Length: 474
Ligand code: GLU
Image (tube, rainbow, N blue to C red; front, side, top):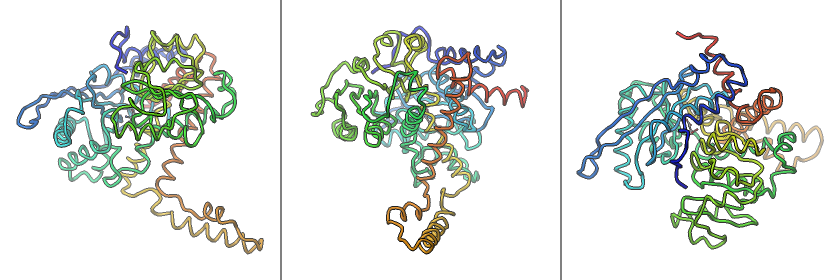
């Protein structure tokens, strides 16, 4: 599973070509289209860090694609293949993503060229704090203007270091915890953020299954139970998505594709067991309860109903797109299908739920976390006990009016006041469902729109262009 370097289009060209389909469908004036597509600013920083007595120079980027809403928002990835084009493409996807799910942020993305597995915890802390300092000093990180989050190769730990670095430099900023999202809960994070992107993917798929006309155009029938699913990447996003589909929806995860190969089992893998095995052995090789193949990408070509690429960009290309035997592709990663592959799949009638919608659950819950940080209070703290008391009164009233006892399970459900995790999941579900409905309406009612991806871009561009028209360009 490596990034393809034989692409004819770069990642950002691929994203722009996909957006162009929407601009054409909307008959958008070329000057406005150019303004929306342009990356507003990008910074490259090269900074030295003393790693165990030896100075190493690191290179990082932060791209701000749009500022029509502030802060600009998007993750920071640590990887060996990051470059300026990739960061710009991902920042553009953030702009469209935020607009699709009505998260009032601009789009941004950062990357650091590094192999994190080569460094220990102390080194990574030094490097992360130094990178954060560069971004803060140069105006590319603050709660008001630019708020990073986890992405590939980063997680809660790196976000805590970034938040602490900002706080040390700006102790007077009362909103300092809101300078980054995806923090540990003990450091201003929100419950449910880690699982949010994967959970959002599942909410998107469930909503798709509530739309018979969309299922029909994908050649699908019935519910999610028993559907054969292939998932590429059991990282943070892929793991939570696959786990929920396996355990809550009774879908069959028939293949899990990882860096070092694929596990295949026609009657369904246990996602949790595979994840435990990976945690222990750092590989899927040797997992007993499945067939292993070294050629991981070939497992994508197995017959299935749903294929979920949840690893990285450019995994479905002109080379393998024609060989896929799936009804529906659900893009949990950013940019897993190249523009050329997308053209092939469109012609072949494969339905694709696009990245900018499917994986927007992460930034949605980041938005909740940022609001929690600005309001300096945990969601549910004020009303939870009040709601519980009201629930108790309701039960007492029902019992005295009917002379019957309410069953325990019903009492528990009615009495329970919502805590932060309940509210986050409810907000995430609502967001994914509303966005799906907008997208599906556009797909069905706009005769110039032939696929979900173009529908998603039309929805996004419509909202973004409105803010250009309302405010004007100055
Ligand atoms: N890195 C995630 C993404 O690509 C999350 C971004 C965020 O929460 O700001 O959507």
